[in-house]
Image 1 (tube, rainbow, N blue to C red):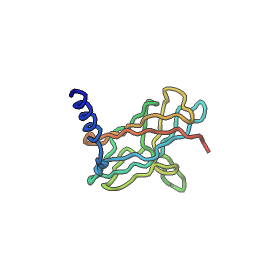
Image 2 (image 1 turned 90 degrees about the vertical axis):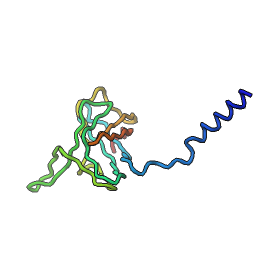
Image 3 (image 1 turned 90 degrees about the horizontal axis):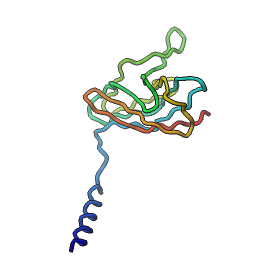
Image 4 (image 1 turned 135 degrees about the vertical axis):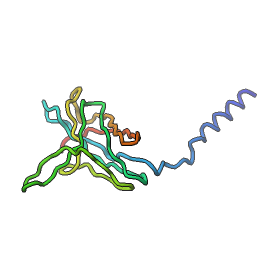
Length: 145
């Protein structure tokens, strides 16, 4: 009798997650990666797609990783005929929009690594937004080239 009850409980628990759809009201990080820093360097860049699937704009409040002391949002801008990199103090992503983080545009600058970063490794990126929402995503370290 107890065995039958145990089997029934296992079957019911197994079906609990079936049929659930992903939350359409979420923020998603896609294809996050970085290249290993130049030997001796303590700076790198993360590239990705940050997708706001919510019905409201989101504002990035704080970013951190498991591999480094500091992460900042930066962007390349054309100024006086030259390409310059600037820290973006305020990043707002409209509802139902994506923000690309790519070479020559927005990207995440990573400073002061805790240990050497090598191709083939993976680490966690955490992005916190105004209002308390946060998202965690894996970042793959790809070989350069």
